[in-house]
Length: 215
Ligand SMILES: C[S@@+](CC[C@H](N)C(=O)[O-])C[C@H]1O[C@@H](n2cnc3c(N)ncnc32)[C@H](O)[C@@H]1O
Image (tube, rainbow, N blue to C red; front, side):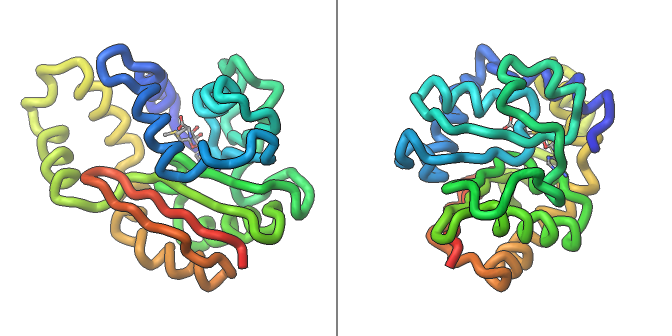
C-alpha cells in the first residue's frame, strides 16, 4: 500500500496540463488493444486509483466498466466511485468467468514480490472469461530510463517542480519498481505458465505493453 507522501505526489500528475496526460493514456489504451474492444465488453481495471482511466473509457462509450483499488482514500476522491471496489489484486471480489478484459496500468510495479504477482495473476485468470484478454502497460528497463533515473536522483532535478514531484514518487516506490524492472521477463514467462498465451509485447523507451489471452 502506498504512503501518504506517494498519494500526494501522485495526485499532481492527473491530467497534467503540459504533459498531456490524457493523450498519453489514450495511446496506452490503443497499445493495450482496449479501444478495439466491443463497447459492451466487460472490463476490469486492477489498481484504478481515482478512476482516471475508467472515466476516460466511459467517455469513449464503454458501458461495462469496473475497477478495484486497495486505497480507500483514493476511491473516496474518485468521481466514479460507483464503479470501484476497495480491493487488492490478490483477492478480486468478483465471480469466476466475469470479464472479457482485465487491464493493469502502472500497477504491477507496486506489487511486493513474485509470489504476490502470481497470486494476482491467478485471480485475474479466475475472473476472466475463457478467451478473455489480460493486458498491462508498465515501466520497463531501458537506457532512457536509467539516464532519467540518474537525473531524477541528482541535485539538478530539484530545479524543476515537475521532477521534484517525480522524485518523491520515485523514492516512495523505488524498491518495488526496482524489483519489477529486474524481473519483468521472468514474470511474463510465469504468466504464460499460468495459462496465458502472449498476443503481443511492445517495448518503448520507458514503458512496455503486454497483451495475452487466456488459453
Ligand atoms: C501509479 S498508480 C496507477 C493508477 C491507475 N492505474 C492509473 O493509471 O492512473 C498505482 C495504483 O496501484 C494501486 N495498487 C498498489 N498495490 C496494489 C495492489 N496490491 N492491488 C491493486 N492495486 C494496487 C495503488 O493504490 C495505486 O492506485
